[in-house]
Image 1 (spheres, rainbow, N blue to C red):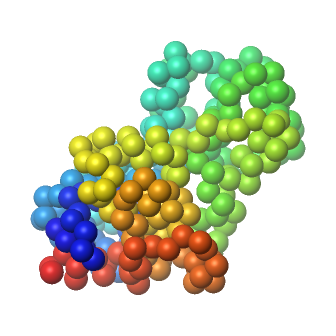
Image 2 (image 1 turned 120 degrees about the vertical axis):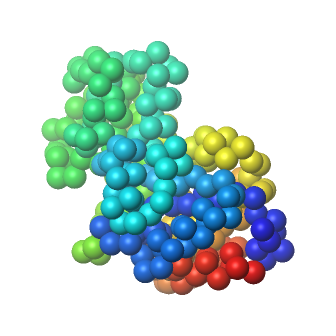
Amino acid sequence: MRIMEREICGWLIDLDGVLYVGSKPVPGAVETVAQLNATRLPRCYLTNTTTKSTASLQKKLQEMGFAVAAAEILSAPEAAKVYLENKGRPICKLLVNAEVLGDFREFKQSDTDARAVVIGDIGNAWTYDLLNNVFRLVMNGAELVALHRNKFWQTEAGLQMDIGAFVAGLEYVTGKSATVMGKPSPDFFAAALSRLGLKAGDVAMIGDDIDTDIGAAQELGMMGILVKTGKYRESYVQTSKIKPDLVLDSFADLGGLLKT
């Protein structure tokens, strides 16, 4: 399939802000996913969401009408689990949502002897005491593992600060860099490309974040398609050095390109 003179053989697609916002599907997105499925080109849906398991994400998508298989979804928590398993399942301090915590049930946990601190979305549970606990663990040699480092995200109530602020703060005070699992980690994109069985130059990434979706994908050689839904803000995009290959008002507009 050719888009803007590029041959596209597969797709990487963000979820929140692209297919849906909160619990509401983007108008026309369900039908566009059905069109994509009909092309039989491989697809992988990427998400930095840290509050839901892969099974819950698929259920949410199905309830909204999206025909997406669980095997097509790659989440940051799943990537972190594989990463830590490959490191021998170190003792962890897990700062993740209760539902996601179940995916790490085989890992031992400790507030004092953890060798890895996994940071996800824990909402209002952040406290000064908790940050100090993490600070001491990292200063004592624990690896700081961030499920992502997004600046902000779009909710039904508007923009909301994301965990990137806590990750950056902990890096600053400890002098240590976090190992980032989700977008824009090159390893995360590499895992997705592996699922597709394609090279970066043959793939298009569709997202609403010009930094973690578009810029990161373009650096690896992918086509970057930015949609004006979700966290998209015109003023932020205009001042960015990143230039998307294509900008669409909505994911639904991809449908018209698929017909050409």
